[in-house]
Length: 524
Image (cartoon, rainbow, N blue to C red; front, side, top):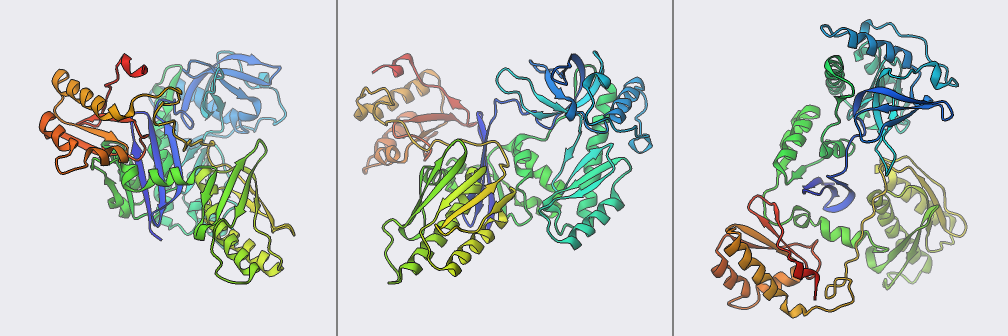
């Protein structure tokens, strides 16, 4: 199986697609303008105590104060609090964490007034981003995530992911971690550490310890409130959870992000650093690798499967419901049971992919085509279990009922992402008023005239829908050829599958979008 990662960085958002044998398996998208603060560590100050909520509000420099509940202070809060106080008071020397004497754990049923005071300086980590009018959710259970492990200062336990089933592997990993971890550091071993070499684990351990030491340095020199540790770049943070040594290529279309990703891969897997490649072509990167087409074909309500079968996906408040239909599939056998099994098997392939792609969380109910034989239902159940082995999210699959219903519970790995595959009306733009679409090329020509004559832009690319591009290039002496003669050979026409039919955009030589819209564009 060939595996590639495509990273599209635009001014508004970052998109990452994981391709397995050229087929989109995972898809993540995050807005650039959102404050990306989960995982950041701050030196904050207690501003308010809320006994009724058994919580406190902490100033961490955000517009809204952060909220921390007593349960989120963590059992080692007294040790952390004493360490912070000592480090702030000593501006010349870093306190080695292995020399810290741990205090008694706090009472898990205690009250916030017993451990926090107004004006107290505490080290907190963002656990949940600000939502609407609410500030960030905070925790004092500090953790530094890596690819193979999560490092936790002031803890003293080693735990291994429950998704690693082999008891021998669990024992091996615990022995390795216990032999390399410094004193007063706890570790959670992640699923990706299965089969990892000692040198790889040791290298990441050293890297995470250095992150903590840098955090400590900023804590020592910082003023209230101050950022002591900042999560890696958004692209690296998204990549960290899906990275696998089996990746053959990681394509990035932004030089700065390319350097971040290459540095990260060089750190965790130096032998794979060459797989990170910078994409420089004019065609949009998601179009070049077929991601845009697959998103539009895979994220709708109805999704096609092999041999003419299809599935219908409905999302309710409590669960996801998936209905399997044979469609216009031609019979390959006169045996109805065999045909039903073939359709169900093909549907299972697509359903397993869809659950990863859409990150379906909670309960998923699948209505397969009825199978009368118990051995066929068992074969379908085992097939689905095998398909779900590559799913990073925790899940549980129940055998099929006598009505051929399968129930799956699945943990959501990231916030649900709504991808709208529908397009607005290409003629009226959703306004229910028709513009003369036949004049669209003339309107484009006017825009380009303004761009080249008034704004004096010589090198640019015009991005349009493939149908419009085909129309502009039609004929021996095409309109596109005449435009290049008129506006200069610095003009390029780019087909962009993400565009709606009568949509366009113009990018300069540095791929920054040029706004050519005028007030008249809003009127018929």
